[in-house]
Each structure stands twice: as C-alpha cells, then as structure tokens.
Image (cartoon, rainbow over all chains, first blue to last red):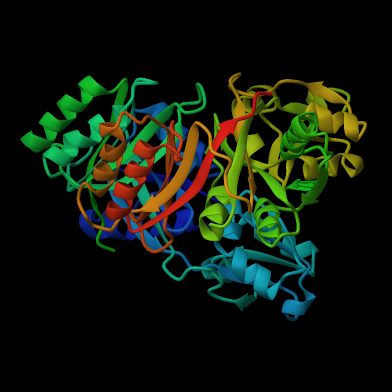
Amino acid sequence: MFKSIAHLGPPGTHAESAALAYRDWFAKETGQELELHPYPSIPKTLYATAEGKADLVVVPAENSIEGSVTMTMDAIWKLEVLKVQQALILPIFHALISRADNLAAIRQVYSHPQALAQCQYWLEQFLPAAQVIPANSTTEALQHLTEEPQAAAISSERAAQLYNLPVIACPINDYPDNYTRFWVLSLQPSPGGNCTSLAFSVPANVPGALVKTLQIFAHRGINLSRIESRPTKRSLGDYVFFIDLEANATEAFVQSALDELKTHTEILKIFGSYNLLPI
Amino acid sequence: MFKSIAHLGPPGTHAESAALAYRDWFAKETGQELELHPYPSIPKTLYATAEGKADLVVVPAENSIEGSVTMTMDAIWKLEVLKVQQALILPIFHALISRADNLAAIRQVYSHPQALAQCQYWLEQFLPAAQVIPANSTTEALQHLTEEPQAAAISSERAAQLYNLPVIACPINDYPDNYTRFWVLSLQPSPGGNCTSLAFSVPANVPGALVKTLQIFAHRGINLSRIESRPTKRSLGDYVFFIDLEANATEAFVQSALDELKTHTEILKIFGSYNLLPI
C-alpha cells in the first residue's frame, strides 16, 4: 500500500497542489492518508522515489503554453524503473505578489523561468521597466519579498495565503488556457488504462525512420495525443521521441503494435498505461 | 548591404561568439565590417530586427544536449517575417569561474538555466553542497563574483578573460559533444541552400494527421534532419511542428512537396533555404 508521495517543494508550488489533489482522491478511494515529501528539484523527487524513499512521486509532464517539462522527461528516460500510475490536469493561475503599494513601485520581478515565460506579455505591458529575475521555484521567489520592498514574485494565490503576502493582480497569465498535466509514478507496475506513454530512439541517419514508427500506429487506427522530441545528448539531430497513445497496452492489438515498434527502434522504453484522474 | 547584427548580450555570451564568427566570415566574403548590437533577451533581438533596427540577427536554434531553444522558436513562429540566411554550429565549453581559492570554498553557483542543466552531474559530483541559482545569461552570472567571494559562475573562458576573472575548471560540461546551432536571420529573402526550415500546425483531433505530412517527404526521399514539437498555446495536445529538411526549396520536387504539404496543414510557415557556414 502506498504511504507517501514526493513532490517539488517547498509548500506552495504547483506540484504541491497536484500532490494535495492526488492525496484527496487517494483518501476517498482507499481511506488512507498519504504523507507529502517535498524535495528541492524535480530530478531529486524522481531519484528519491526510484530509491524507495517515497512510494509515489508527482511531477509536471507538460504545460499547455510552455510544452514538455524537459527535466522530467530526461530523468524518467534515464531512470526507466518508474511507471506511470495516473495522470491529472490542473489549471494554472499566476498571481503577482508583492509588499509594494502599487504596480509603479515595483522594480524587480522574481519567479521560476516557466512562470516568467508564461507572463512575459503581461510584464511587458504593465511592468516594462522592471527587471525580470529567475528563481529555482515559484515559492523560492517569495523569499525576496521580505528584504526587498520594491520586489514582486509570480506565484500561486495559495502560496500568497500560506506565507501571508498580498496579491497585487491575478491571473496575469498571457494565455487563459493554461493547464499543466502531471504524472503520478511509482516502482509498481502501471494499473492499465486508456493512455499509454512510451519513448524511443531510432537509428541515426536512416531516412524516414520516424515515419515508419508512426505508421505502425496509424495503420491500426491508434491516435497519438502527444509527440515530443528530445536530443539523445550524443550529437545534433539525434533524438528520443516521447509519445502518448490513446490506447491500452494490455489490449492485444496495441501489444502487437508495440512488438512491431521494437523492431524499428534502437531503444524502446514503455512507461505504462493509465487513466486521467477525474478531479 | 547588411551593416549590423543583433545578438543576446552583454559581451561574453555564446551568442556574441556566434556574432563575432559571423562578422569574420562576412568581412572575408564582402570586405565589409558588421556592427554588433547587443540586446538583453533573445525575443528582443528578433523583434528589433523585424522592426529594422538591425539588418541581421543571430540566435541559438538548438543545442545538442538541451534541445530546441523554445524562446527562439516561439518568437520566429509569431513574427514570420524573418528568413534564415545561414546556419552556424559552435562547440560549447562551460568554465567554472570564481574568485574563491578552491572548490571547497564555493557556496553558490550562478548561471543561465541551460548552462546549469548542461553541468548538473559535474556540480553534483564536485560541488554537492553548493546552492545552484539561475541567472538571465551566463555573463550576468559573473556580476555576482564581485560582491560574493564564495560565489562561482558558469560561463565561457572568453567571458572570464573579458572581465579579468579566474577560471577554476574547464570544461565542466557533463557531455563532451556539446554544440549549439545558431541561425542568422533578416527581413531579406533566404539565399537558397541545402537546408530548408519550416513549421506547421495540423488540424486538431484528426488521427494520423502528422503521419500524412511526414509521408509527403518520405515518398520523395527527402530526409528530415530535425523535428520538434511546440504547443500552439491553445490547448493541451495541440502542436506546432518545426522541421528541417535536407533539401533546397528552390528545386521543383521540393516545391511540389511544400505545395502538397499546404493542403494537409492548418498553418504553414516557411523560414527559408540556406547553407551551413564553413567555420
């Protein structure tokens, strides 16, 4: 039985919100309470879980504005042992938090680079003269507000409440449809479900190698809901492809597609079949 | 005639090294000297060139370890008016720069998030207790060394020389094959060449839509040297694909492929055909 879940900390991050949402769902399903274990970086949450220090881990996989969370993908590809148990999607609202009296008094804006990128047009419009400074997490950005009265941070409304800080504006996202898909992973096998995630590399310099792999799914009418490429870190133009299928790997025709895929790929790693959590 | 080239500044960035390499090549070809215009962010270099404030702009397109430079791709897709004139590839060596007497005295390491990501295993091995802090550029990270004697920065050896700072270790890259491909763009049409870059979106929720587009090239024996997906920023699972073809768009059979592509895509933007600079 799962007893703990690792997430990017400190309290107030979007990953913690995902861990809390999962804990609520888990308690309703099983009657058991999960313990939250915050870690200072995404790779550290995954490595700790792979070593058995936590039973589950929740990590951001993809954001609708900024795309794949590359740190997550690289660590999961490298580790291989962690299997996806569930996915969950949370809406993301960014808040401008500051002790300054008004917008005109703000000189610096701190946040995680992903959050800064998601609010860049708002910042250009309303704080064109402010210096934009990256931080390791949206919560760490809040630490600057204590000593710097002219500083602001971009974080969540929940974090502002937790640390008792004033919200100046919310939401300040450039795009209203801002969602993050999280994955919950563990060392246990996947439970099965209507989404299958995998990644593979194809032999370098073979023309049409990627097309051949995608045709395997197209011929069987299996739809791809996501495709992302990441460098193999060997040389320019050499990629690992991360793919999500709208299919369950426990079904025979999906299994036959995966068997065929094995013959056209160099390395193939299957992260499991799972469902999207209804929250 | 081109007279100026915009790049991410301040002096000492990898983008400036690319601008200098291009300036040398340009002087040899034309006898003309290009003026360098540094800007504080990658999007700002591109927007300034689109507005005619600089004749050329050099931007990182892709790194062999960290992948596509998403800021560059998003801005080029949005602007559309800039066309690729040339590509150039530079090897990247990261140096640990500090006024500290030795490694043991270092408590903080500052750098651009891409550089920090490219040295993460080295940092875990040699500076496991040091705090890793993001900065807006590898050069901006150096500013911390003046006031913080226990701080180090990851930047280039050239930057250390420029600002008269000691190099503690170099190279500290986790992967030796670390290269960045840069693009030189302008408002002028592309000159033609053996590489063609384009991007497109496909109608959402049409199964096999991506496969159909890739088959257009596979059927004609046109090889893809790069494929990257980026979110359209509309909803999760809705992508723009960035593709590089080993082909010249001025040739008839390539043009016929692009005409056919138009009928299978929602939005298609062609960034031009160009050559890799021999430097």
